[in-house]
Amino acid sequence: MKRNTRSVFWRDASGREVDLVLELGQEVTAVEVKSAMTVVSDVLRPLQSWRELTGKPEAPCALIYGEDRAFRRSGVVVYPWWTL
Image (cartoon, rainbow, N blue to C red; front, side, top):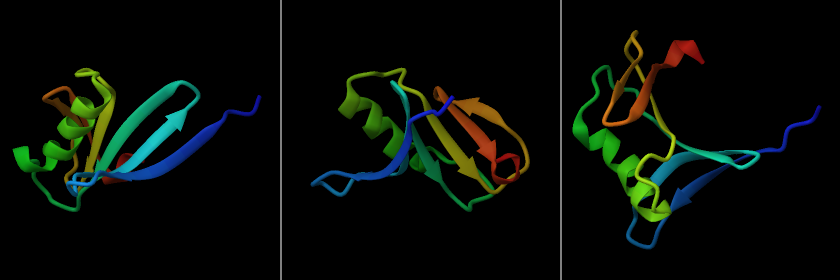
């Protein structure tokens, strides 16, 4: 079975952006990619902006970063880069 998958980059007129927006069928997930070894609140801001734009405060979002553990923060699933 073939799945219709598409990925795009998103930026609005104010300069807010999300590195990757993955569309898999009806499901849309915003993804940020950072090389940082720690997760600070600022790296989650683009994903929060995405949720505001979509009007879905629980919209699926993920952060990929440079450390070695996975966890959830502010409703965002955080993955270490090597798990992908």
